[in-house]
Figure 1: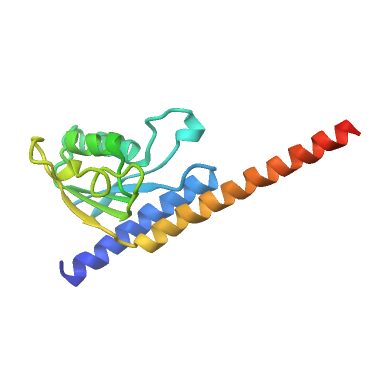
Figure 2 (figure 1 turned 180 degrees about the vertical axis):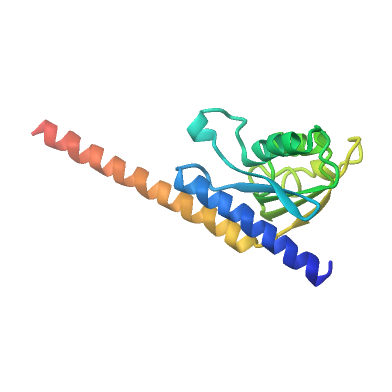
Amino acid sequence: MNVEINNKDRQFMMAAIEEAKIAGSLGEVPIGAVIVFQGEIIARAHNLRESTQNAVTHAELLAIQEACKVIGSWRLEETTLYVTLEPCPMCAGAILQSRIPRVVYGARDLKAGCVDSLYQLLNDPRFNHECDVTEGVLAEDCGQLLTDFFRALRGRKKEEKRLRKLLAESEEQ
């Protein structure tokens, strides 16, 4: 991969990171995605599962839906999807179904990743479509967003538990 492509990959991953930060600010797991066509971002999205209480509102799926509207087709040929976390099985399936030829992701998902970690769905020759995959672009930045989010979440839950205990003790007195 040449330097220009690396710089473009970094640039577009930074846009996905900005989407992830929006998700985090909403109390969502900070995952962001952008889809690029002919060197331009045509779709942006971030996780909205908590806000919508809908299991399928992952960043990738929302970006795919937007890109389909922009292009006017369900086939997203000649696009690249940039996402901050390795896609799950549902998102990997949508990537295959929409014929996205290239996926670039930041951090691996050791618990649900289906591009490299648990399965290699995007490169399984049994499907009628395969993707070129570039992993690890700004992986530390992408991973740190998730680490910080979940550390803060655990801290809030621990504090809530402590406050509930104090409240229960005060009610007993």
